[in-house]
Length: 380
Image: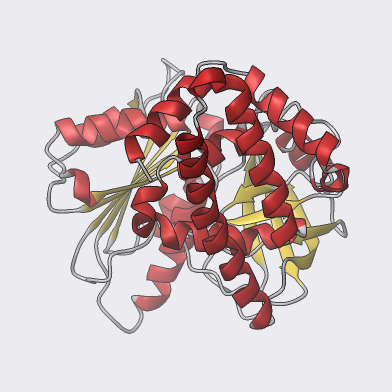
């Protein structure tokens, strides 16, 4: 395979914008109508998510070793859609047809062979991981029930979920959830508590303007609703294994959720062993969106924990004001700490830039963006 040819050809196709997913899905649903039921009734929010991910991953298949764990998890995770090997073939065929359509004369036999080989490698890794997961009797998804709903603010709802079988998740990971009001629209959320004996967990769901799922989740979920939960995913956010290595946490909005789970885990450990010092900065637009302020303030009684709330849009706020990333970076130095960042893509980018400029090594910064494949807070 020619890695430059793969990347360059995908870059050319991507210039066609929304025409690419339109052609791809039209080809897929016409040639394999049986896969249509795997997708939401309305494709407006789906847009180019699948096509963009396919192009980005497959065009980098020559570096497959670097993304094998991600692909394996993706394959296991896609079991919840009922995906089997034949479905991967259908998607691959439509991907190649899309490339041929938009590349025209540039679609040479050599390039076609390279793309076919690259997709074959990627899909093989995913299918094999899914098959191994099925052989281990791991469920494709877990039935769950809503135990309680707390509309904490205008924009944030805290939901208690109880799966029929416990999920073996690690604080910092995310789970996909399907709610009854939006069938086949799975969205990722991060449990906001350390694992409990009864298997229940808490999700923080933020309202996204125009969101296809966040709106019904915040406004309509109620006790007794049945939900479906996907397997835990994600390795980006986790506490350092070295308990003496202190931690900086920076959260925007419901990006706080994975950090709440980590703090609960540390609080349990502190009873019997040394834990790292943690300083958490939580940013919100307005003071009332600091929805865990009381709980976090109470936790500052622990000698290992410090907390700074930050508000960006209220000029009358008496505390720290501004963008949470800039405020946190200005409270340094943090060069000796592991930095964990979670929030919107824009917040994460800004925070990483601020931390880097403040002298925090890039290798010490670990991030998760809301709205990504393994989002920690709510997606649309």
